[in-house]
Image 1 (tube, rainbow, N blue to C red):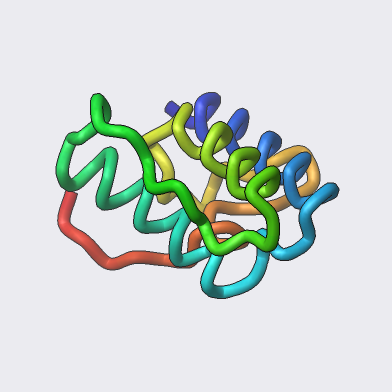
Image 2 (cartoon, rainbow, N blue to C red):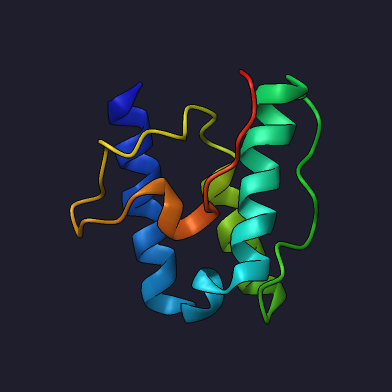
Length: 98
């Protein structure tokens, strides 16, 4: 599971290199909703993700959507990307009972 999270964080780092607004609070909230509420809490993995993640362009929204759709195991601060990012850098912390 940690390897999957590291892959996601590295992919989000790559997206952030091209689309800096990924760190904006509204975008982080959209990412958090997609991962936690869509995949984990509702188990709706067969449902499409939302169209907009609050990014500036549709291309940027699509990049985030593709990256997020690959992972559900997310909230683990001990796992970092190669650049040192944690889930909190992209989604913030959500207090939910899993």
